[in-house]
Length: 150
Image (cartoon, rainbow, N blue to C red):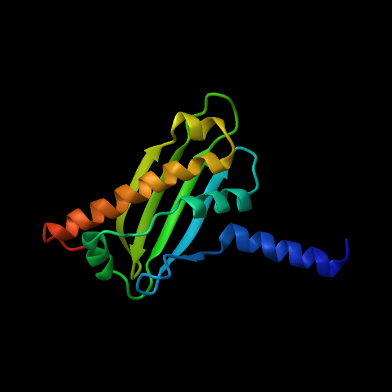
């Protein structure tokens, strides 16, 4: 492989491992998403694409109002998927939302049996469910008069 080609591949792989994606760009300034973790032996880029397909943005009036309190500058969302290689391994998914370098809220759940037994794209529904819970919990916190950023 030529040296320039090897450099391009290395830079692309580094971005896949450490870069962030802009999501929910139609809401305020959007959210910066960073995907961590592993799904069996699949490449990180496959896992990142699966997570991107499952991410849900705040949508209800209460969720949007709560999100508005942390929307500037763009908050950072870190989703971690851990599905070890091997039959019978449980696996988990977590999401942590940060704003202005402070932890805001997080969710964690075990993977569903389907997500544990299929390709990384089977994890999209688990990610979607976890994100719906995260936005609902954020809206509930704001609705009770609590500070959105603890």
